Image (cartoon, rainbow, N blue to C red; front, side):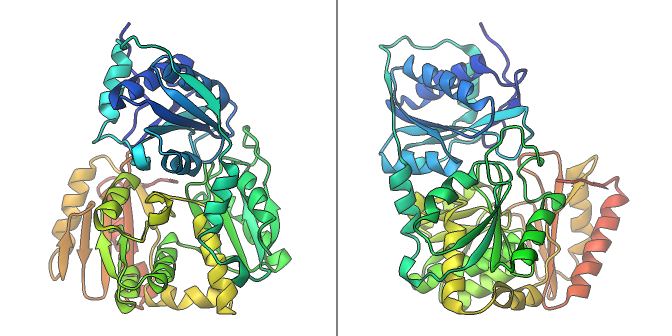
Length: 457
C-alpha cells in the first residue's frame, strides 16, 4: 500500500512521533535504503530518546528482511555510526536520532560505504519513493549481531592527541541530558582532566530543555559552573553530539567560526601545506590563518554532505563550519563532536596560556555578528534586494552558498537555510566591531522593511 512519508528533509529524516515517524515508516525506510544501496552489511545505532530503541528494532527488522547482515552497535552518537561503518568496512549505516529536536521527535541519518553521506541530491529522494511505494524485492532473510565498538572507537578518538602532552585541565562539560556524557565517561579514565559534569546523565525527557547549545538560555548553567569552579574551558554538545561548542575560562561562549581557524592551525602544524575546507558564511579569519601557515583554504557550500564531498575531492586534513561541525580526514572525512575538544585540550595544555588569550586577538581582528535568523515572506526577493543595495563598491560577489558580498572592510553572507524556512545573516569586519555592529543593524532594518522578523533558531 502506497503512503506519503512527510519526514524526509534535505539531509536526513526527522518527524514527530508517531504521526510523521513510527515503526512502520522506519521499517519501510530501512527496506528502501537496503534496496537502493543493494547493501549486504549495515550498522544501526540509536540515540537516548525514548522512541529510539523501538524505531531501531524496526530498522533492523527491515534490513534483515532485505537480506542484510546487521551490526547492531546500540546506544551511541551519530559519529558512532560514522566510525563503525568505515572501520568495519560495511556497505552503510543508519543512525536513529533527532539530535536537538524536541522529545516527541525522532529521525534517521544515513550513510553508505566509507561513511559517505546520503542526502537529498544523491539518494534520499529515491529511498523516499521506494519507501512510499513499499514494493520490495523478496530475498532470503539476513541476520543481526550485536557489535561493541566502544573500545576501538575510544582508542581512535585518543589517537588525535598525544596523551603524554596533556596537563590536568579543569573542564566543565554540558551534555544537556543527551548522549555525550556516556563517551566522556569512557574517555575520562585515559585523560588527566578534572571534569565538572553538568546535566550529564542521559534523560530522554530532556528535563532541562532540548540539548541545543545554540539556545542562549541553555548556556547560563555552563557559564556559572566555569566561573564557580575556575575551569580552564567549557564544552557542550547537541543531543547526538555531532556538534561541539566551546566556552573560555571566563565563561564566554566562543563562536564556532574562531574554532575553525584554531583547529586549522593545529592540523597545518601537523601537516604542512594541507588543504582546509571551510564554509562561506564567515571566512576572513580562516583564510588568513590557513594562508599564513602555508596551507590552502578551500571554499565549500555549507552543509555536511557538501563539506564531506569537498574534503574527499581535495583530500583535506580538516574541514570546519561556523555551525560547530568539525570534519577530519582521519575520521572518515566525517564530523565528530569529540575530536575537537580533545584537540583543543592539547592546544591549551601545550600553550601554557588561557583559552581567552589564544582566541581573543582573532575575535578582535575579525569581529563577527554570529548567525542571525530571520523569517521573511519572500526570501528570494529579499536576497535580490540586499544584492541591489550592497553590490555597489563591492570587492567581490559570490554565490557559492547564498549571497556573499565583500567590501574592503566588511562582508556579509545571506543564505536560505537548507533545513528550515529561514534566512540566515552573517556579518564580519576587519578590526572594527562598531562597523560590524552598524552594518548588521542596517541590514536587519532593511530586511524588516520587507517583513523580516527575528527567529530564535
